[in-house]
Picture 1 (cartoon, rainbow, N blue to C red):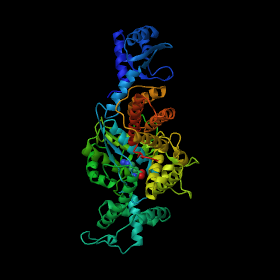
Picture 2 (spheres, rainbow, N blue to C red):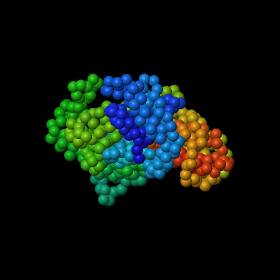
Picture 3 (spheres, rainbow, N blue to C red):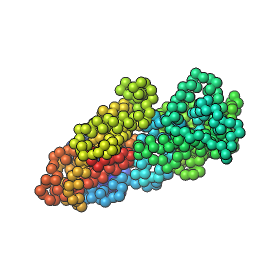
Picture 4 (spheres, rainbow, N blue to C red):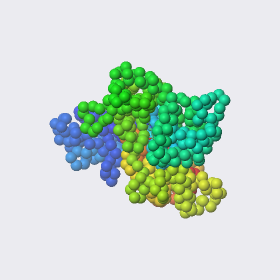
Length: 585
Ligand code: ARG
């Protein structure tokens, strides 16, 4: 359905036209002086130049027509020619009833839906997930859901890092520890030989160990490099071992994402792009994009107008191995063939922005995607500790994701002691609730920031029952739940009985366009703000009125109806942010 401002724009534009002015002047926006009016149109000011007439005179002509429309409780002209508008309660009620009947709850659906591939998560196999992977997963999942809520098709691909040097490091370290394993013998036969079972805990120990070792042990580093190369060239023993590493590590990664409500349609990895490399090279060759440079093959992507350095891409190194850039180009080819998307959106740490700019330029030069396909990158800021530096463990190490979530769950558990409800639960239920509250707090604490910005991870603040937090939103929903459980759901709204209710109704009517805005800006933070504002208005309403004890039946029915809608709207926000609500807390 159309947003309320779009519908009012139609009406005001028609009035401009009828009065002899350009209808495009009729754009209506939400008022920035809520104390004066609900909506405003500033078109008369722009119309002055166009029609060579004083803006106030134009506004008068238009306002005279709008005053004939019974929907408006007020049509005023302010200052140099702003048209201020408010709707009657009857009109607001009609609009909010229509909103409740809309399956999309007033979120405008895209007129020409796009297919969007979203590349997020990006964990590296064999490395434990650490907090650096948290933001990509949380923001990516929210944007994917938001894309869908706005009527587009979204495909999520985790794009595992499963084909690079970390794999070689782990293989070589295992080689040193278990030289007798069949996979390290030159005559390994996949038909008869097997690889010993690995487990996640030992893998989580091996990678950091090997990674530290390569910094001091040059010979080891070279062997790991060779192992990566051999793996990429299909050495049977290494492939078998790699598959085992993959199985264990991906199982671990899946479990972590599941806890976070993060789901991927595809679990492709960099290794899956390998099949597309020959075709990619052929295209690059055919377009004359490869230039020889010190034995390597590079692609020039710099443009004359560049003001910052734009180094060429190394497509193939001197030793014949491919790079992170080649893999991403081959993946674009795969995505184009499999999904023919209108847009590909990538989410990583902002420090990879040059990489993606290079890759996107090369993809366009090579014609891997058409001119009208958008290649889009969202680089996010870092999650910092109280000292303003990237968040670390107490001993200064990189915090693993599982530890972070355990910390958040424990803190939520502590926090929930304030609630009497906790006593009604057994230990397992308490744990489930604490985990949901903890994860909601972490997610909301992240998503409420503009993604590009760094933010300070402050669990205490994120878990507060008051203020712009996930806890507050979950708590607000549970308050509504407890009322609705005790009263029969109403099926109509009969009236608006207070200013707070009017504000609530307006907030509901304006929520749909917030989704559109959040998607356009790639900023789920708009949804966080809106959910918080809605919850705050509800809290005020709840504080002012005793719904269950209300004797006026019409009033009570209207209130219950409104609460049901507020609940739906809050849940739509939370669900889009991939935050699980709780029934009670
Ligand atoms: N695995 C990479 C990393 O940890 C992120 C992958 C991002 N996606 C991509 N298509 N390059 O840095």
